Image (tube, rainbow, N blue to C red; front, side):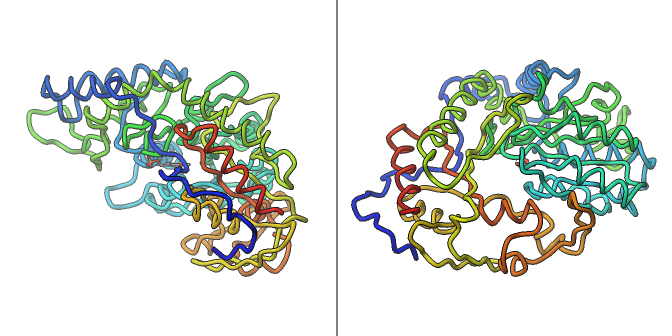
Length: 431
Ligand SMILES: *Cc1c(COP(=O)(O)O)cnc(C)c1O
């Protein structure tokens, strides 16, 4: 730990406090997993899968939910569906997005955007807005001015906070573009009374181990179109045709959810609302405990949205930032009285056995995507390296939030005492 501040009277947590680990309820999940074993429905067919699809579709408010092996699989099949609708089917081995650009959220996990590359498309990254940290509708509008031929937008609701979907939808409608909604992190969050995952043309949620509801892995494709649901179900089970033998007309995938995983999810689904409540309590406990510090919590659109508060995050005021630089895989900072930075806070938390994390590093700053176009509200931005932003204030919103922001330990099993101790550690960083 480089921090030279005083933490000597504080004790490390005996058990690690996680960023967000699975919260399980014993027999609630086990009974359905056991049922799968006892009835020998251990493959990708069974009552657990059917029930999970039914419950999820009802919760989201869409007609169909298709259970898949991961959120990433759901995103991939959404991308392929959208591409075929826009540009027609592609032969096996040729990406369905070959030669086409797609507008994508910039500040997100890379699983949001990788499926565009799986299909040969080129992601164009759209800068974030300060109000929700999600895709900036103004930057999206600029992007359509620069690339008027684009017909597909992939948008994520970061950390469980809904994006401004009305504005995004309006811009997309004006340009005849389809929306893939990555609600992997935002299951249970709503915007203007409607659930995230039901606001785009194709919706995706994830049941990965760190998400608000988990099957250890798994995901769902969400739609109102029977035809799309059938297609995704078929593609996800190797595209078998209705024939006595293995008959294939289209490229297939092994993306279907297992009935055992579905058993765990089925047991978890009944706890969505209490998990959200616990996450919300954590958010507001941080907000209250840190109210005198030179930082603010991750913002959301209070008038129009209800997040699921999956991760609590903070962003440090510019004038309370100590000197800091980040390389590709390492960092430095100068511990300074009255100031701090995400790296110092994360160092201190790690020292005391608690897991925080930097803000998801924006896609336009990732080496893999650095040569892709990046559009800010001011117009044509440029993908750039870390070194560039460390010279002073970041020029785009995403890089700035990455520089000054961090994800706080947000595990539902953290006690009030533990959270208060974390709050104390953060406060000491600004002494
Ligand atoms: C977790 C996550 C995914 C991927 O979901 P998996 O189920 O892990 O494949 C996609 N997008 C975002 C924003 C995520 O956080």
